[in-house]
Image (cartoon, rainbow, N blue to C red; front, side, top):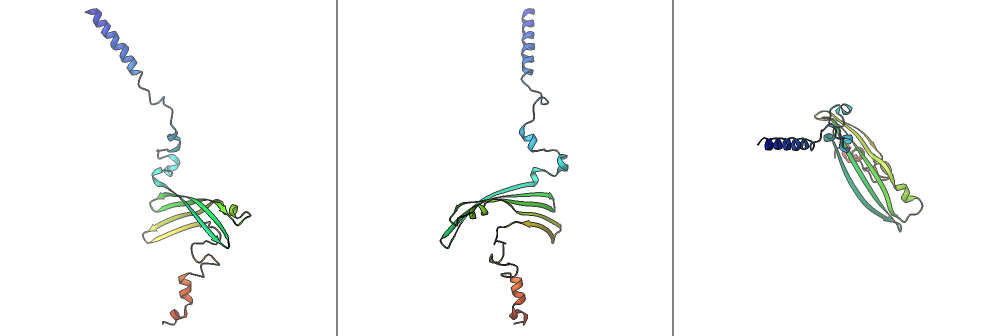
Length: 174
């Protein structure tokens, strides 16, 4: 009986020590790639780079234009990033990569359209409910300014406020 008890005790000691060897100490583990990219502590640059405050959207568009017996195709990839700095302050930036896969105009026309640009960088601040301040930078292709007809200055031509200001029928009260 004593021999069986010593054998059982020896087996328990051997198997329990090998069972403890199956668990790794967490301090010994090396950090993964995620720990270098995402820092979940509040002290990482004063807590500004919190992934929950950052969103990113991607889009790709293709267009084709023809005229005068020539044509050009243009592809544009846009990466829109939005970062919320505070509840009333945010920053957004649009980076565009454009390329021209087809071009019959010759020369460097297609290469002139291709490239990387920051199409918009904007800081938005809303100190009160009905008051917003926007600081914006835009780099748009030649002839496209988001208003007007693409020729000349769109502030004067095609702007309803400017046209109404110089319309004699409105000034005469008719």
